[in-house]
Amino acid sequence: MRSSNPVFSRRGFSRDGHAGFQAGQPQAGNPYAQTQAGNPYAQPQQGTGFPPAAPPQADRMTMDDVVSRTAMTLGTVVLAATGAWVLNVGLGIALVAAFVAFGLGMWQAFKRQASPALIMAYAVFEGVFLGAMSNFINQYAPGAAMQAVIGTMAVFGAVLFLYKSRIIRVNARFARFAIAAGIGYGLLCLVNLGFALFGAGDGWGFRTGGIGILMGIAGVVIASLFLALDFKQVEDGIAYGAPREEAWLAAFGLTMTLAWIYFEFLRLAFILNSGD
Image (cartoon, rainbow, N blue to C red; front, side, top):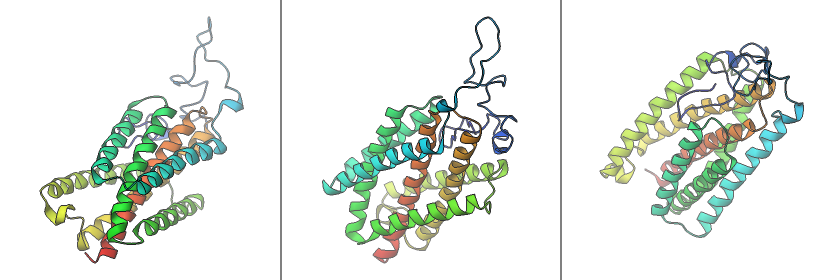
């Protein structure tokens, strides 16, 4: 879904957001089909005006490509988070890292092509933010970080199982619902940030108590919907013969979503363990 929305952009689907959900029909609306008019990857043959034949299989995205790039980006997040934890990075630096990570993420979302350097830089700053926040929260709620890791792994495994067994069917309607829910949740978080800046909820806004728990659960559920979209992106990209560079975008989407799920679990663990 080559969405123009810079926040919820998910590459690997068709531009109209519908044809990409026909993975079993690779030529129907396939944005990577070399014989399709308007394919951004197809270049006309000199003197003919027609695109060349499909590229060799070696130039196309595979599951191994996605797994290896995702391992690199997630591994970078983990290493940066570990460093931030060990060095006891303060909350001020953590907030700066969060804003830098957000900016880099938006920059990549606006770009038409994947930038491995940009994606890895995002992973570094995201890791610094998550590591510093984990260390801070763990001091007040011992075990919160480990609980967040276990929760994230459980959600990833559950969504993958539900997706592979087709209990979750990701189609255009599912995508519209997920994006609408994500936008609504994002706006709610901005409102909460405004309250937090004025000291409400001891600086957490209404992210405390029962309301905080409900918001955390809603965040995990909505992020899980985006995780299913990420799985669909990977499946369609492979089925449609996406260029190998698209594996970086798949890894970027998975990393962002898993970081989101982890942070939601971290805040939930903090609320539940701190007795708020």
